[in-house]
Amino acid sequence: MKKMETDVLSTHELADALGVSESSIKRWADEGLLRVSRTAGGHRRIARAEAIRFARATRAAVVRPARLGLPEAGVAAADERSGDDAERLYRYLERGAGALARGLVFQLYLEGQTVAAIVDGPVRAALERIGMLWHERADGVFCEHRATEFCAQALHQLRLLLVPPAGAPLALGAAPAGDPYLVPSLAAAAVLASEGFDTVNLGADTPIEALEQAVESLGPRLVWVSMSAAPHSERLGRELAALARTLAPRGAHLAVGGRAAAGLRLPALPNLQVGASMAELAAFARGLASAAPARD
Ligand code: B12
Image (cartoon, rainbow, N blue to C red; front, side, top):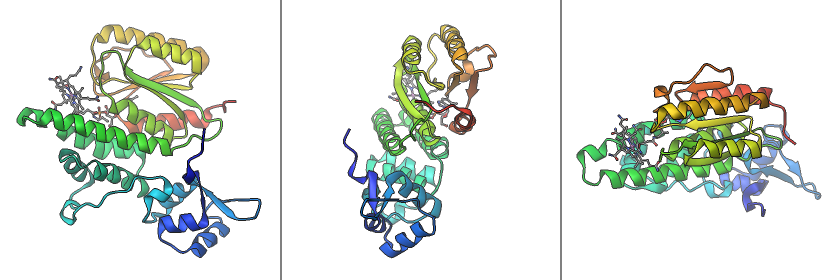
C-alpha cells in the first residue's frame, strides 16, 4: 500500500505544522524530547504518529493540521467558541457544521484528552441531546442522522491516525444483528486503537455467527460487542456466552457494553466483562495489552 505523504515528516514540515522554527524542532530532537530517525544523508525524520504524540504531550498549538494529516478545524465564529465542549459539539452537529464538529473532536485529542474521554464526554452528551430533537421538531430525524454521520466521520479519521505498532494484539468487534447503531462500535474500535490494538470493526447489524467466523480466521486477543438495541436479548445472551466460551481456550476475552447491555442475562465467566463506558473498555484493554504476547 502506498504510504501517505505525511507518514514521515522532515523537521521543516513539522516546524511548519506547529508554527515554530526548524531550529526548535532540531533542538527538541537532540534533547530527546522528540523521537527521530535519520535518512541515509543524516537528515532527521519524524514519524507522523510521533509528531502527533509530541503535539499532545506538549500541548503545542497545531497551526497547520493538514501537515500532520489532520483535518482542518474550520473557523468557528467567536460567539460559537463559548460553552463547554459538549455544548459546542451539540451546536455544530445541530446546525450541520460538520467541519467544525470534526475539528473540535481533533482539537480535544490534540489537547491531550483520551479518545475514551472524548466519546464518553462530548460525543455521548451531544448525541444524547440530538436524540431528543425528534420529540419536538419535525426535522429532528434528519438532524439526528446527519449528526451521527459527522460523529462517525470524526471517529473514522481519528482511528486512521492511530497506526498500530508492529506485533500489536488484535481486537475485533461489532454491534449484533438487529442493532443499527454505528457510532458505539466504531468508538470502541477507535478507543482500542488508541490503546495500541490493531482493530477490525465489523460494524452495525452483525450476526454473532459472523463474529465467530472472524475469530476463527483472525485470532483476536479481544472481542467487543456493543449493544444499543436489544432485539431477541435472551438468544443474544446465549450466543454471547457461547462466544466467550469459544474465546477462552484461545486466551482471548469478550467485552460487552452499550446502552442495552444491562438488560442481558450473562453467566459469570472469567473472560467475559460487561462495561458501561469507553473508559472501562480502555482500562480493560490496557491491562490485556500489557500482558499480551506479540503477534508474528
Ligand atoms: C443516532 C441514534 C439513532 C440512529 C442510529 C443511526 C446509526 N446508523 O448509528 C437510528 C436512526 C438508527 C435510531 C433509531 C431509533 N432510535 Co435512536 N438514538 C440515536 C441517538 C441519538 C444516539 C446514539 C449514539 O450513537 N450515541 C453515542 C454513543 C457513543 O453513546 P452510547 O450509545 O450511550 O454508548 C456509550 C455507552 O453505552 C458505552 N458503550 C457503548 N458500546 C460499548 C461497548 C463496550 C464493550 C463497552 C464496555 C461500553 C460501550 O460507551 C459509550 C460512550 O460513553 C440516541 C440518543 C442517546 N441518548 O443515546 C437515540 C436513542 C437511543 N434512540 C431512541 C429511539 C426511541 C429510537 C427508535 C425507537 C426511534 C423510532 N421511533 O424509530 C429507533 C429504534 C432503532 C432500533 N432498531 O432499535 C431512544 C431510546 C429510548 C429508550 N428508552 O431506550 C434514544 C435514547 C433517543 C431518545 N432520547 O428518545 N437511533
